[in-house]
Every structure is written in structure tokens, then in C-alpha cells.
Image 1 (cartoon, rainbow, N blue to C red):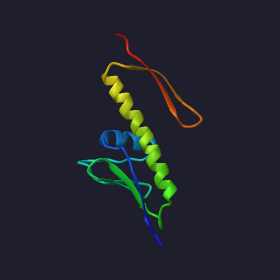
Image 2: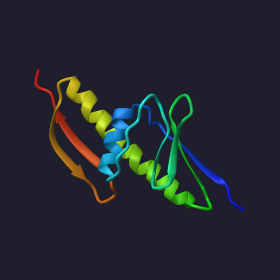
Image 3: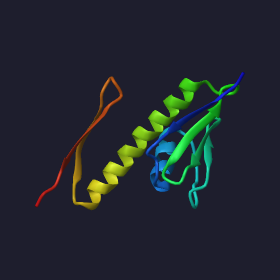
Length: 110
């Protein structure tokens, strides 16, 4: 018996989703909060953010969670970089730790 795995995300802004997907070697173009899919995982707009979902007959639940996590991390990376650049911060260093965490060091000269 199949069931749907649904993961609510904080993905909102299409331009950051497109950049995050590109980082994961996927090309998506999102217009007007439309749905999109990556690796048989659908991302549907719920009125507040995108939800990742897939039928368990085709995609394992862990894959849905994993893809949503990876996309969310890259989304946060791009949103943070762009927001801080707009506020005058420059990237000094960027390190990816063994755990997968990304550490950014930024500087703003007044």
C-alpha cells in the first residue's frame, strides 16, 4: 500500500530555489509559484511555501526528506549571501565542514 510523503519547507523565493537546484545539478525555472519537480519529488506551493512530496511506490520517504534538506541548505546559502551582500558585507572565507555545515565569514567595512 502506497502513501504520500510530504515535507513542508521554508522555500519561498523562486530565484533562490533555482540557484539551489542548480547547485544540486538540476535545472528548474519557476514562474508565479508554479509546481516543479526534482528526481521524481514534486514541490507544490501551499500558499505559504513549497511542500516536497512523493508517492512511496516511486520514491522512498528518506529521499524526499534528504532532497528537501539539501535544497533548503543551498536555498539558505543563496538567500544569506544575497541579503548580506545587499547590506554591504563581503565574503572573506567559506568552509564546508565534514558534517556538511557551511561556515561563512563575512566582513563589512564602515
